[in-house]
Image (tube, rainbow, N blue to C red; front, side, top):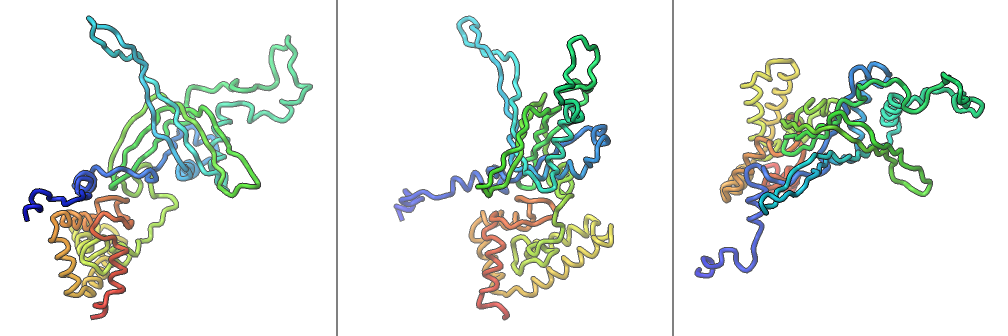
Length: 356
């Protein structure tokens, strides 16, 4: 008894410190994962109309980004003496180039974006073969050349890219890093190798004039057409609309279903469109089905598990509201609650109480 008071953690410490920092308050301070990001290439409207390269292709190029560096900064500074006190004075800020790697896709959408960019700034791409024959060398005294090379193309100050924005996402929130007036410093088409089996990729290094920051909620179409193109919109079987889970708590569970139905009705979404009404009916049916399949023992077990620890109450709230991570309107398995939805399904299917 005395040892329990003097050594509340026993001989070994535990995970509580990290839990207080990273798990409490809906994982507010949890570290972001590197694979949750999204890139948008915004081209000037006048440039989009110059080519068959459509808005769809530009959006697809963003989806084909494999990796992207976030903006980097450094200051030029000088240290001055102010009556023997050291004083740091900034002279200027430097925006360091960032590198973006992109898949070399089979439809050549990324290659087409570069070809359009290359032809926009460099006249060489549009010259005929005759421009590079040896007998077409211009004599010194000739005033006008038949062809124009390199950057001699009367290009105006309108940038090809209006901006390139890299969005990082976590807990259904995004932070946007917008590179203002970026220009490609270098482009690399990768390499081919008969002995290699990995995918080829393109790399470009961007320079930019400034950085802007944005943030907001992740949803279909936000940020920048997110989840609008090539996205599976069929409800997940783990979600309430896709079938749900025969558990009291957790995503797709009975409490989650009741909350979504109540939200649809109170917000009016259930009656705005025929699809919304049908979706609410599907949620109602699935919630009723899953609630009917619950046993007294299962309800008691989940309730005891929640009430036995105050932290579990917050976790249950997160699993009901689904506000930890993912896209608003979509469900992804995660381990934010006391047990994952997948584990709950397996326990339900293997439980000896099944069918009672």
